[in-house]
Image (tube, rainbow, N blue to C red; front, side):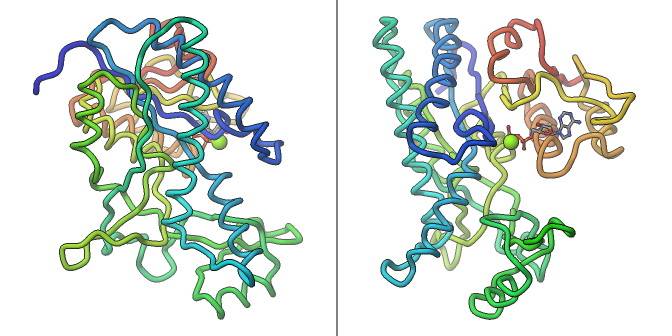
Length: 324
Ligand code: ADP
Ligand code: MG
């Protein structure tokens, strides 16, 4: 089915659900999600009849806490593996968004159906991230050297020293493979085409590999912006809007000659990325995801902060990445 109207894929960063200094109580998370939902409803109110909004989000702090909870309670309750933990956080965060979005829309008289989906994302067992000690994504709490070595021996975890001079310098590190395809793509398209605001691919999606024709969950974490880009392809998004905690991406980030970027072409974005302006694990994958989106056929990618979402869509702020 050919689509009419414009489609915006919104990727929400960590601060949309939990602020860095917070512990992550349900109350705190609801408060943040509610603030985020107010911005999203503002965007929904700017949509035309055939326009669609699709949402994805991170889950780092939530899955980190839940994984730790599995470990602490393991004598009494069997710990669940990372793929299951990822699915649990999709349910938790999806519920919070459905609840807040629906309450705000009811109060404003906006009538749009909202649904979140539990969503698997296919990765390749031969991805370099699964090879040897290549795994690059630190998860869970910080560990002393003794704890790290014990867990490595007991569970076969890959552990890495990520904060050299800290009292607990080590962390478990899991593979962060490249997302290949969104498993529930067809179902998501049906929901979007029918007019729903869909929340999908939460936390980068539940990572699965194909083994003898079957999908099997793996202990890995997919980058939510790269997975969000795959989702943007699925829903044929025109605009990929990455909402984080900075209004614009910068050159020479954190240096005296730092410079905010209003606009960059794909060629410029590739060059800046190669020159190391966008740090790995934060701005790097966002810019990479934007480049992919435009090379796939998307019209525009925008990186900005949550509170500037509507202004950025109107071209007033944010970093806009365009084909050329
Ligand atoms: P989120 O959790 O919102 O998805 P991250 O925290 O991973 O996002 O990435 C946003 C962070 O990226 C910013 O707060 C900033 O510290 C960091 N960053 C790295 N490189 C840059 C850059 N070149 N310009 C702006 N921010 C950058
Ligand atoms: Mg963050």
